[in-house]
Length: 108
Length: 113
Image (cartoon, rainbow over all chains, first blue to last red; front, side, top):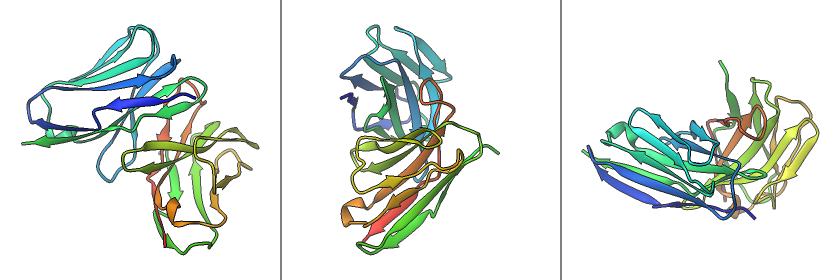
């Protein structure tokens, strides 16, 4: 069955630095979604990518969908304390499957 | 306000005592699902429903039941809870299952002793 894997599991970042989290699927995906969960909160939708090679930006966040539609990445520039939380990717083939998430902590 | 409401938020129970976690959405969404979240494992789908009276198993359905008698409600039932069902549970809904964003409830932290 479909498996979505995310790396790294943890990301400790100095405030102001950039980082990237990666999402890989064992199967070709119809689309991929990204969610953010703040500590103690619930997942909140960030963005959806549908097309092969698609790139979307939200302020300091850049999301990319791979050409083969089997991988995706989230790049955050100039990390801020508000970026703390766990970022999940979720891929669709016949159902929505979530990765294990990347938990981000920020050193001020 | 568009929302998914889960109750209770916190629950401590004993092994074998049946319980129900309720979930209700006010967005007229067709698709609803239940997830459990455990450290290092992310969100794993328990059951999902594509519409009224249509439910199907997710990745970890053992020990759980669901029903979808009305569009807005999707309760999660644990007939005989066990300690390995201690977890954080989320209900989610979306307009359809594909290509639409999922809205999550606030979560229910369940402890089975």
